[in-house]
Image (cartoon, rainbow, N blue to C red):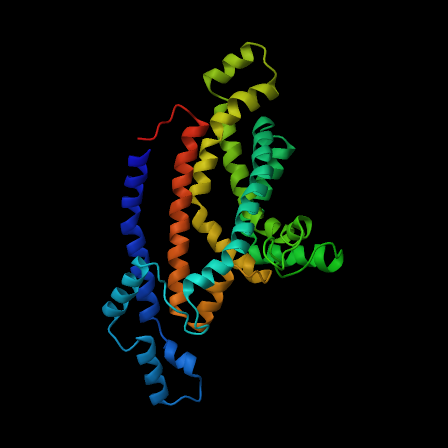
Length: 318
């Protein structure tokens, strides 16, 4: 196990390096000067030059990148150009809302999608199977922000059941109760889970339908086991592995959805922080969020690899 973890960590270090380098070059070579944006429209060239010197933007790109990487190895992601606060502190302040949104969405999507895909495979060709196919197409086709605004209009404006925007923490001096905390998360969870439900349900349907053609399933049926027991005890445990692998692989898509959902619902998470930084050309925050997101994707894939042997003992970590 330890050797496996070390190999995976060593394998992803070059990936993280390339990601950080590419993003850094894109930001530095893109049109626009962060110093000019910070100085404002009425600033003179001398004012802009002073800001460039203060931020280190007057140095060459390789030197700037080298300084940034050296600070990263010391756990320092730099200071925000606009907020004048450590990027690490700003990201840490946004972790709880984003994790609340992410974990709740994954749990909700699994609770809905796995039974839905299993039943669709059980009743393949029936009305539920056709309904799932249509829902999957809609889930992939409709943009996330459209789903979010529709849910806001229905449940927050028309029915007035749920709050529209904002986030109140579950911990700290201004914390709220568990129900109030979950109530504000229902609409963001539903919005972000729509894509994952469509995706996981289709993968579950395909995996279960394939498992139902295996010899051990025919043997179980020949023994007289009920069809529901055959699916739940034999087909589904063997069909769940592609779902676990897919969750780990699609974390990148999930992160993109988080940025959109946090923007729609005014969510004070990491995605909202990244979007505001892009609008302000706040390069330290953009670089910090990109690096943290890349690490989250790598960690998600690693956890998926570790969970698979727990689900299927035939698979061993080497």
